[in-house]
Length: 355
Ligand SMILES: Cc1ncc(COP(=O)(O)O)c(C=O)c1O
Image (cartoon, rainbow, N blue to C red; front, top):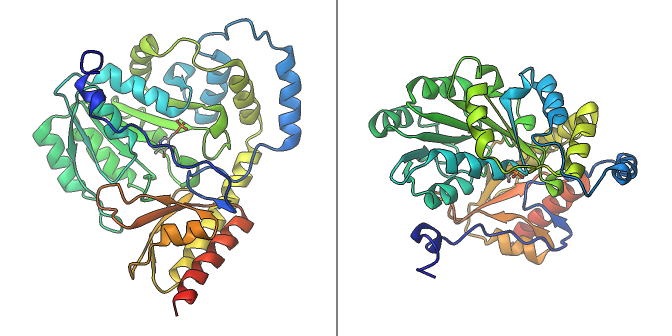
């Protein structure tokens, strides 16, 4: 293989896809527990019959960008569409990183940040942020001044910790950064803030959003960037042509025409997040961390192997032990009311069984 592939690829483990099998409660991928309502699915499937499947879609989906622009109060030329936000993150990093370029990020955070940076030969500079700790803004600013990074990769609310960085801190980073600042808002709809209002102020800011979480569309793959026009104009040049398929485009447009489903589901999930957080806090033997996303980070405080104990009881959560600083930690997605109750019951059982 040495003759065929880059060294940076050969040494990678690659993205490890978590199990997708059926469990009593599948709470391991931060998916939305609510599917798109059946009547909308039926209506869209009928509409799909009328499309010309033999033709390419209109490149860069102007109608979809129009709808997004209206929602976010930006111009459509400020939007780049992706087959999932991961696809355009890869496009972005391929356009930015040359071998040896410095890339700063704050682990534990989204796993694809280091995967893609490695592939393009970037040098990762880590500014660690321990769960529950104060955000190391001064260390981050110092690292930016010292290393002159080509790009800084931030995620807020952060996966897998749920921590939300203050926009004031983002502004300080933008003021100091010599290069681009990437801000992943995949869980933005579950939080009360968005950095989109800073786009006019900071030329190098790129915001990433997705329909995989709040919009219940993980299976159809759709995400997008918001940035200044001149930044998007560069990225459009190398984005894969026709990357949004006809069906995904049609569904996304339909969901944007009636945001009430998404908003209703998000409100429900935020309520459940509070309920789960409070009830987990009350269980002795568990430490749980506040979250602005659709999941909670937690761990056992007495060494119980909660991942296996939960799995044996039919509950699948995400073992995030492999991340920096997260040895022994787990992440649970907020599910439906029934799934959350099941999770809480099984969790309580584990500790009662030990007595
Ligand atoms: C921080 C973050 N960004 C992006 C994504 C993926 O988004 P998409 O499904 O749009 O590729 C995820 C998914 O888990 C995520 O946690």
